[in-house]
Amino acid sequence: LGQPVAYTDHERQLIATHEAGHAVAAYRVGKHRKLEVLSIIKRRAALGLLAHSDAEERFTKTKTELEGTLKIMLAGMAAEELFFGESGTGPSSDLTAATTLAAQMVGAFGMGTSLVSFEAVQNGPHTAPNIVAKVLSNEQGREEVETLLREHKRDVRTLLQEDRDLVGALRDALIEHEELLGEEILAVLAEAESSRPPAEVPG
Image 1 (cartoon, rainbow, N blue to C red):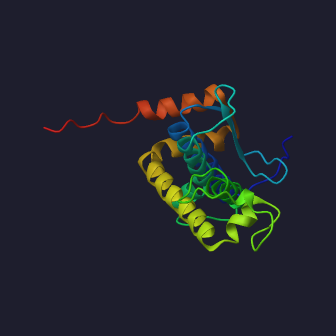
Image 2 (image 1 turned 90 degrees about the horizontal axis):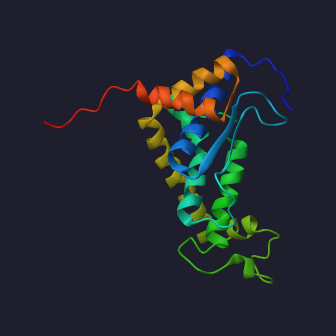
Image 3 (image 1 turned 45 degrees about the vertical axis):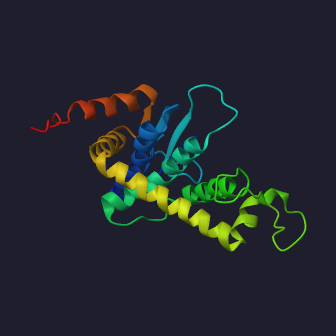
């Protein structure tokens, strides 16, 4: 349930930009994602949210799909940096989720430079209780997680720079309405895209 709070004008701008960044990234890289809710209404610890899901029931994910998920997770931070020059405390939970996923990719899914599964470790120096702790306690594993996070944050920042107008359109719509549902999100994006000047044809 939503918890009505009085954000400052700056906070509304920041939170709306953050969530718009997530949404534009999901729109661009989440080819099989369904955008459901985009909101700047506080719910528990979350100051805003993007709810999105698979367009159809899925039980497996490819490496490319997981990399897209990382970009979506890191897009809020990238949008804050792009529009405000720095990020605040908002991306904290995003970084937790992204670190967890990157550690799983490296240490459990065989998507890093090694096929060794850290889940196989039962006794020894890296017997932490969960996969994230096992991977991050290993120097190479930690470096690979860091590389994954930095590369995908860089890539999604480039994407959002190219779609800065889409982020701005969703931000403004969120500030006005506080919450957008599926078709409303897509309508804002479609209108922003249709307002772009036609691409120049090399002569």
